[in-house]
Length: 374
Ligand code: NAD
Ligand code: GLY
Image (cartoon, rainbow, N blue to C red; front, side):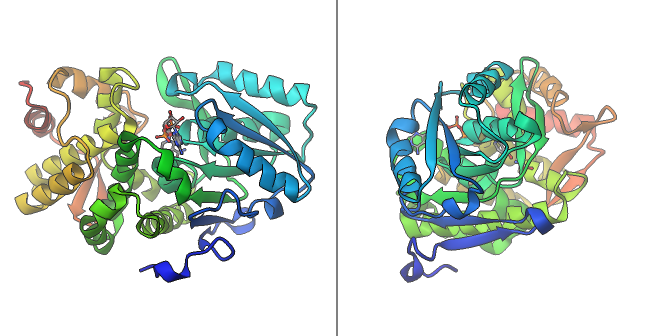
């Protein structure tokens, strides 16, 4: 595990995403926004920081100063804050700004913010002038461990989340754990859901490490956060290396997400945070795995205890009926040829895709994990 004594911005903790000539580093440590790490990844003299009205006042000036000190010309676009702005209309606002500023093919877009900013800025970079350079500076835990890595970019359609987008990899990712100091507690817990997800789906040792460090993570100890992000990014980088376009094992990253997306959509986007819905969704997936004889009751209990200790719900909201949750699960992108494919647990530390879940078992599981009656 990471030795806290080695943390410094001159030699940050680094994870590499190995994708041939599109490979890139993820730098993880405390204080990296002020360290001039991104300029070597900006091919020409211009960069546009895309952020939002919450994050820009906190970090954009510091970032711009470090870039300008390295001789770059920097412009800032601060978008409105919120998932409801992850739309084609906001994408149009980005294009308008880039046109107005006469941005050329070598200008680099820098996403400074959470997953919403990373996803929409990445898609703007993928599509403007058929592709311009792009850097991710994620400022939520969720974005640092998940959305900034792996190249999924896009916006929502009124009828579905993340329905319009592209695979487009950044030139580098800079995860400054210092930026998490201003993150609301609820958002930190939401990010922990994705950290737990990696332990559950891929690495039981990491799962045990999270169990013993969850309190340090919640009090934002920088060295512990760095280690959690490093381990999470190592797992995501390996999965993306093997399956960049989600033809196979990348789907394992959706552990808890089919249940979670149904909760998010059923409650109305923004009522439950994505990570909160994934927390409950992982408990639902664990319970279903138990009912299918894949894991034992102690393993389910372990999942629930960890999710709860991260400050996350372990059950779907009671106000959603079983029928509603079940039908919303069919709207998930993971439905193939009309067949629901679920990510379940073969054991703790190893997820697997399961195609033929008996409908009755699924309905009983939803009923048991929401408190509602079928
Ligand atoms: P978010 O981007 O909405 O950020 C959450 C909130 O925290 C926002 O209000 C934001 O302004 C604020 N914030 C961000 N950084 C802050 C900081 N350092 N201090 C204070 N406030 C800060 O939400 P998120 O959870 O980061 O990301 C969710 C989005 O990510 C969703 O749109 C989801 O679809 C997407 N996502 C994408 C992928 C992918 O692979 N591309 C993976 C997971 C999630
Ligand atoms: N967040 C899921 C993925 O990147 O594939």
